[in-house]
Length: 268
Length: 268
Image 1 (tube, rainbow over the protein chains, first blue to last red):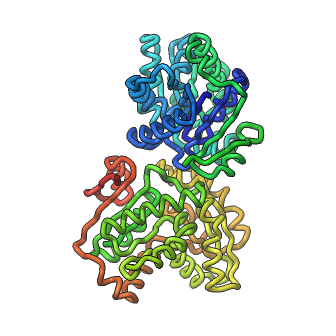
Image 2 (image 1 turned 135 degrees about the vertical axis):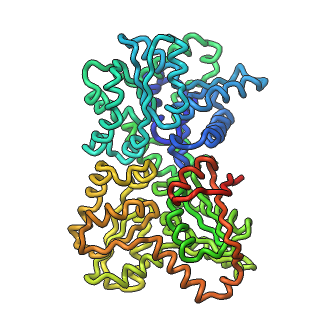
Image 3 (image 1 turned 180 degrees about the horizontal axis):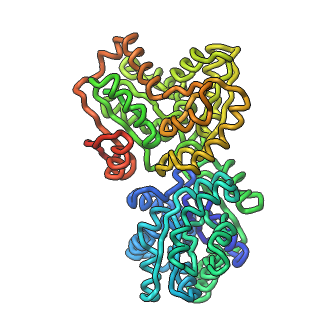
């Protein structure tokens, strides 16, 4: 089974692409809706909450976990990977994040070497994208911009309202004046405003769809790692866990996914 | 010692008034910053988090606890009061909320019997203000309006920005057309936008300052309950607890209070 962890609903945009590209596997989604959003929380809190989720998913039988949440990927992925490297059954348990595939894609497609990154305060302050990108190509310039109000706006269903566009414009002006030609949406929620991002940034700026890139990257990973791929069960099962009310998760999450969600349970 | 509980920073607006009106007592503030905001969470989650905080404050020596958070007051105050009524040392432990004093004041000052209430989704859906007001005067009409984006805007420090005023206007239009003459700010955060509320609602609508009313009500309560008042220590101590990073709490909370915060500790 493949585990997908997110602080709330945002990671469903990633799961949706997994189901499209790799439908045969079993999936278990874990949304920490009782403690979302993570964007402004301390490193310590994000680490404790993510560790709890990862342990839960492994205990439930996941062999591969994708940390879909950018804030958690940015702040604690490496620490978690190192911790699990020290456990004896390391070969059976893998944790992947979302920063590297998005950084790789941006480095691949930029023409002028100016990449913009938008995300929560936690993601931008961690400089995780900058580190990853500089590692791939030290000549590229990375321009980060925290957009802390976008998550609440998206969760309110206000993605396409004029007030949200005004706020988004305010956030993006500095990136436009930095002449970025590629923009990384470094937060799962932002995918819901993909069209707004594209319109404000203009035709010359490429804004890739993060879910698509992460799914393509997972497909590639499984091809390159048959020893992991073979551990994954494949009955097409879809399980949803939430730390808050399962009924509300089924309702809101179903709207996010564009389909009814069965099998929503509360974690204990 | 008097305990003040809030889901995050908002309750500091209430504590500030307590310190102004009743400075001699010892206070302990508990902000659940690792899990804020509560406004959209399930009843079950709000109950579990509030219970945890109340138990913590009692264990630390508080004898009287004010649930400053409107969402928690609305959803779980009665349940908590009833639970503590069943404990043997009930006389030594009191829990108060903020709904009743604000409802009483609104009923007292309305002239046309149309009272508006703004708050989080959790507070408005609970109909706690409506129940309280109808109990005081069944002839009064109560018009509730959830304003879920205001908490994130205030926490971002955007209280006075034009985008926030636009969003606030959108929320308040239905209340204006209902001809309310009194507006209850049913969320501690909204006090930071008090001037914006007043300006949009117009001169004919009264928008009382919630912190002032709650502090006056506590003063009155202590006068009427000398058996509680006598249990409270009075060394002028101020203690701050947070479930997230104490340094950030000291910094942001200090700005909210307009003074440096000493004694900020993390709960365990």
